[in-house]
Each structure stands twice: as C-alpha cells, then as structure tokens.
Length: 288
Image (cartoon, rainbow, N blue to C red):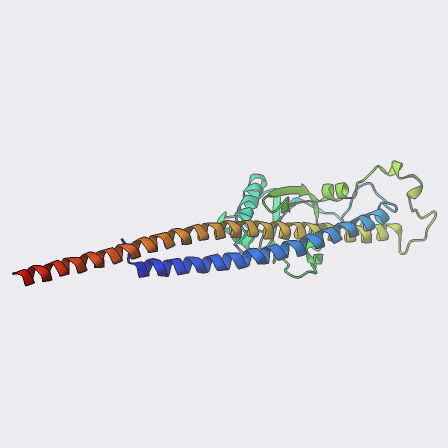
C-alpha cells in the first residue's frame, strides 16, 4: 500500500484540476451567453438587409458580388471553421472526419479557419490552400475571406452548430444555397409590386452595382454568422468537456481521499501493533 503522504499529494493535485476545470466551465458559460446574443443580433440585421436586396435583384442567382464579366474558378472551395486550440472536446475531430468524407484534392481547394483545424489537417496529410486565425474579438473582419470566396463558382462551409449545451452537431452547407434559404427566396415573378427597378428609381452607378454591393453585405453577414455559430458550438463543447472533466476529477479526488484515510488508518494500526508487541516484550522481560 502507498504511503499516506504520497496519496495526499496526489489528491491535492487532483483538487487543483477540479479548481481549474471549474474556472474554465464558468468562463465557457459566460462566453456562451455573450455569443448567443451576437448570433441573434446578426440574424436580425441579415433579415433587414435581405428585405432591401430582394426588391432590387437583377438576377435570380446569388452572384456573391461578382461582376457579370468575372469568371470564377471551377473548383469547389471547402471552408472549415475550427477552434483556435484544444480543450473543446471532440468537436474538431468530428468536423475533420466529415470533411475527409467529401474531400478530393483534384476537385477541391481548402480554406481553414482556426489553428486547431490546420493542425488536424496536417496530421491527416491534407494540404490547405488558405489559412486564417479564428477571430477572437467581437468584430469579425471577413473581407479577406470574402475576396477568396468570390473567386470560386461554388463554396461549401463545414461548421459546428450549437443545438444545446449538451448537443453540438457538425454541418456542411453550400454557401449559395444557405444564403437563399436564409433569405427565404421566392421566384422573381412572385415579388410583384415590391420590386424596385430602374423604371421607378435612379441607381448610381447602376442597379447591378447596387445589387453587388448588397450581395457583398449579405455574404459578409452569412460568413460572420457561421463563425459566430461555430464559436458558440465550440464554447458549448468546451463547457461540456470541462464539466465532464470536473466530475471525473471530483470522483478521483474522493477516491484518493478514501484511500488516504485507509492508508492512514493502516499506518496507525501498524504502529499500535508494534507498540503492543514492544510492551509484551518488556513485560515478559520483567517477569523473567
């Protein structure tokens, strides 16, 4: 049996882990509330911009703000949104597994956001074309990401979706399809009198330029929302991982405490037996 001092030292180490995981759990909880609020605000603003855009659309297709003469790259761009580091449970590993099911180096270019995802891709021997750090601030500048996305005819985003504190899912969506679904697109014939055209309004420099500007704004909002959603799912996954780690640490600490008491009691019993044996020898010697 181990010495009580060794067990006590190990218990103290485990108690430190309990304190650390508890602090990270509390921090994740605060980040969840903060990020959820930003997701709601972003959704509301998207609806307002879309209501303006759908009235002046000059094409049924969403063109990502490209000019009519621009020719996009025919490869599909796969965008991965991952965490900046570990301590987020298995959520990034699940995202990479789903990405690998679709990835074909001859058909796809890869853009990864987040250092942890880039590290996982290297471990899977996948070369990515573009890399960005996961934004940490409240303001997210996605303009460099948009410049790359506009070059491609098709883009697909792999992201982490927040369902609840206990559940986070991995989703992949076509960027143009999700913009349309988020905007609740209807056929142009059904828009009716709400259409704003060059017959009733003056556009500078042209209606195409105004529509392209709004498409850029919508694309910016959509990509930002995916990043916010992923951040929300990541902190929720971290909260779940820290909660589980704290519970395991508490169980281990309690088991060590029981082991320490048992070892301490055995030590006392051993010393008591030695003392009694010594007294018996002393008495036996005195009787002789």
